[in-house]
Image (cartoon, rainbow, N blue to C red; front, side):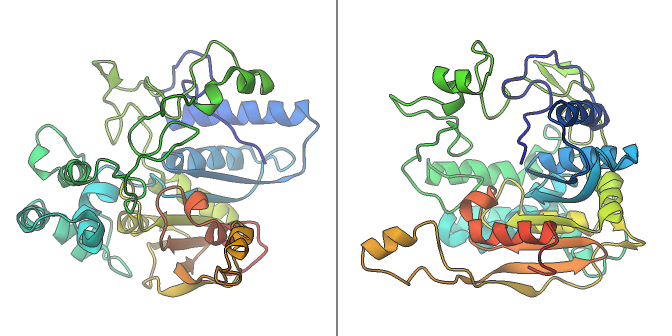
Length: 383
């Protein structure tokens, strides 16, 4: 397995940020990757590209670039997996449109007052979000969804997503937009990113900023590592206060959303792509990702033709905490989980909804994500 920090501007990278598109960073990646392979004598391997969150853009573009090489000696792409991924119009479809039903479903955790809930439900209708879901979150979908550019300045009154986030943080200062069932205290995190807040407890250090760690992995000692880049890594469009406004989401990345071309290309080229979303994730919401899939044409049809409904049943017992349970007299209690999600497969694409999981699915539900990996590798035919 190979973990890569990319593009330039992230992690320990020291180059100058010049990229304006995913096409550029994908070319950078495949050149690096072939150099890595030739350096270590690696070839004729099946390759699976995986990622999470904004890698919902990186993974399809890199995978498509590999397919375009038509070189199975070094780029034998055999499948891809993305968790809680930015594959569609993520600021609009995967956040705003899906936000209010998410609140209703998780009100027991969020505990918003009645007047705020009524305000959200009113905006959900007046801003058109309810109509979008009613028309397009259907199986099969009636057609492509209209393209929308969400303007946070002129449409601030319809920014229900940030209203919800701010209200949740007011109710619970330890609210985690990536895993909404989290309560206080702020958890200690070796990467100093326990929620949407960057936080390093007194006396602790960000793991990759430790001098011994940098020395061990031969990282540049003078680089201050952070999980999320402090400065933009895409510079498309016009600069405004250090940020760039180009692209479909106004974040400096000029490339089209993956559902427009590259993700269908990867599905059709491998027939082994898995897209999964955790139900406790609010930064990328499950129904928003499903709505994005319903706006994608692959292998001759638009979206899923039937609604996902097949359960994911986990029969493996817990191994991670088995000894702890046994030491406390609970041996066997941490047995098979049972139903932990919903799966659906059509035309080379596997969809997985994961119960009791936030954004970082392998962290929150390792047994479920192990099953995902088994499917991507072709070891099982269903989840």
